[in-house]
Length: 297
Image (cartoon, rainbow, N blue to C red; front, side):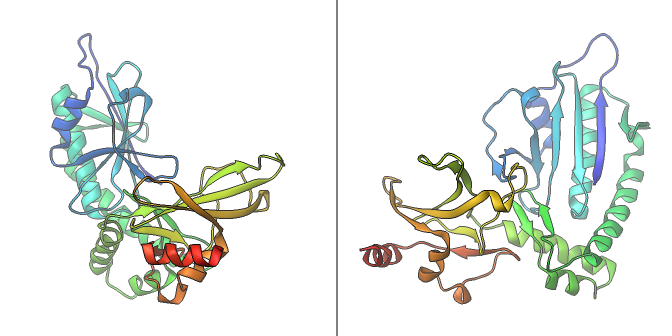
């Protein structure tokens, strides 16, 4: 669910929507892209018509919004997903206003209907109100047996049921303040969000296994149980096993491979700080590596 906006230039003379124009419209917002696991990735000057840009406020990390430019670089599609904070919606519409001004566009398309650019303040108020009620409805449906995943700026976040329960005890204004702070706190640190790669066994091609990487001295977010991220055409029963490659921080060589379940022999799970309902923080030190090597021998 989200807000979908189309900006289209009319007339004979159209400006190219290039990176500089996008930066001018973004002002203090940062520009990035995402990988296949919905993790933030640095934008490296790829052709704009071949990627989806992610724009976000680095001072208040939430969900951000996306921008896609058409093949002729003269029109664009923007999306702001719901369950965001109020600041996201304001930034989304402010960017549209700025970009429209730079391209001499007087109206935008939303849900098949045209709106004048000067109507944006009304839309901001309307969408902030709708987003708040949509978030509250989502919180009421939370269930421990279903991973409630929010695709945030930096990575997916699996919301804890306890957080939903706490939020539902608050007034609406307090809910949004808490939610905004929650999303920012989850993303403000520098960490590696672990996701698996899947491979066919070299000797038995019909066997598929999942592999994670854990690097020495790299603050990491790891799932307590391995799972298939969204986007893979795989089922749980398709995966024979999961393993973890232990990587040193000097040459980035794989120095050991362990079964996933053995991870908790070296990281007692009850001592680890929780990241969300499915993940914990890990820090692989040299002492742990030495301990691992001794046990392997």
